[in-house]
Image 1 (tube, rainbow, N blue to C red):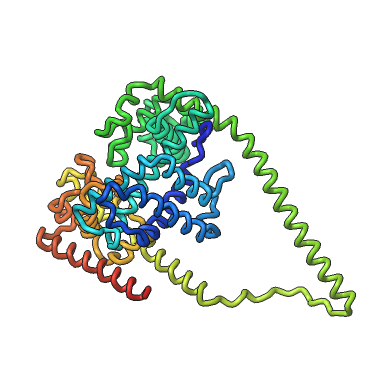
Image 2: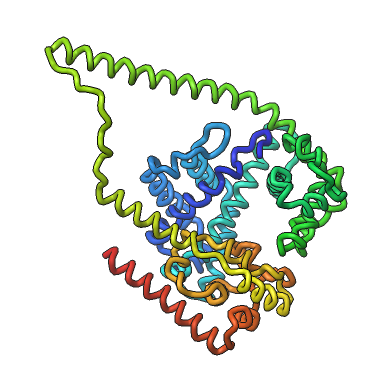
Length: 447
């Protein structure tokens, strides 16, 4: 999404968020976090945190993630991360809110930041702090660039609408596989290829009523309510304000069209740079050949060279890649198994395809899933429920019960796994012990 003055865009934010989270966890291991319960120490902790994270960011400034493209204006992930982190000094209210959240968790769980199994809890709090700060920074820059009033909640709404447009564009592009949902979005049954699929080329061509209907269809086709139809009041007024949605879509579309001219120049310059590098290589090879011939050397015959030998690091990387593939390429459930799962889920008032969609939503490369790869999905969900609670922003929507917005209850998970409650608790506790044992082994190996 592009708007005047804004720098943080969705395609780069994921990497910015992860880089700041990684560096923040490193910093917290160096800080005297036991002072978190003393409000008088929050400001000194911010100074120490800023120095530690800045050092960690600079140390990894040449990593692939840090050098990746952070937005369409040429800023890298490293530059955006460093800039946002220093904004905490200018707007310490976000740090103080973060400290209050950490202090609250500390009162319940002790020094949880030392526990690798609770790393997800700290990451979530860090993500929440920086996401709120990001929207505030973009809102302030929007005001400076346009002279129009803007709040961080409005910037968040712009982001939601941009995401909704991209979801709709994806459905339109694959409309044959989503005929019913696309028809519901357009408000009519489809009879052949819908002309809107070809007409909507940018966000400016997306209609407000499509956004509203798309949100309405998510519960029927995705298993959870859309952003305009949740219990949250954040976007509640928008579903009755198509004019406001249309105006915001138009603003995003107009600025994206205006700023796209710079992209074309950048693309041309990039191609020119590639051509220059190619010519340099060409003249270097010609020069080396002429020099060797002048010195009386013999020219090698043209031949195909063997592939370079694979070193131990490549072997390790290939092994890790194969390990990830083993998780990602698990055999699909049979039709009979899916039928049983759908029957059980329906009896529990869950979406019929709950287990199928929840499996697909797992992050196959995660450390937790590697350790618990032999456990069933209901057991893993019971572990998350025990460690993080029934409701957590890091959970994919496909894991949640649409009726409660939380993970299924232990009774529901036991029924989904077709085991008794005592057995579920026993296997859940054994799985948690696996996580702690794996974390302990990793820490000993590091020493």
